[in-house]
Length: 245
Image 1 (cartoon, rainbow, N blue to C red):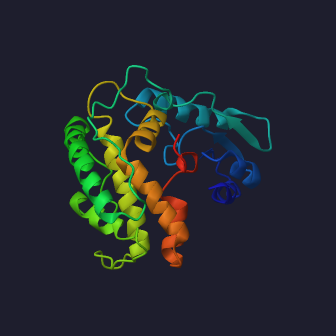
Image 2: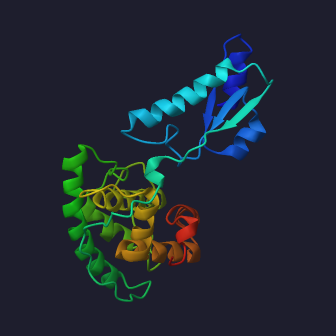
């Protein structure tokens, strides 16, 4: 975006770049840049919060009024409200117990995940009714097909992909994305809204699905299959949650 901004500026049109990664903005040096401390994919910070989005846009547009420079890099001062913990939140989902399961025990993981996913799906359906949308669907598989496909990787197998044109290694990443999205939406179905951090901590510290994705990551690290090793070791579990919080 910074390179595009410089090209547009060279043609006499003023630009402002809103950026999410400050070191990148420092290196690429846009003519006018507003760094925002929001998660990737949320440059305006807050879905369904027009007032907050307006504040971000106005902070960016005000840079067009500045006469200092030649380069401007300004920090937006506030975090998005959804990044602040809500002390009144709890997930309102009754989860099954989390017994210890051997990392390669496909039958054990299958049984436990089926019970937990059934409970969480009820809240996920309520969340769809509440918000009228879902981000689940990246894998193009129905939720009941996620578990049989993903658990087959635990014993070192690389199953065939049921989606034409998508490799098994990429598809298991998409299944993990769908699993995390479904749980995250279910956690918001009832009551006050949690912060993103609260959802993450709940998923990775209290759910069988979080335990399973850590086991799947371990299987990927041990795998000789280059695609699964790369996708599974890098994209299934965020760095802060590689070990139990």
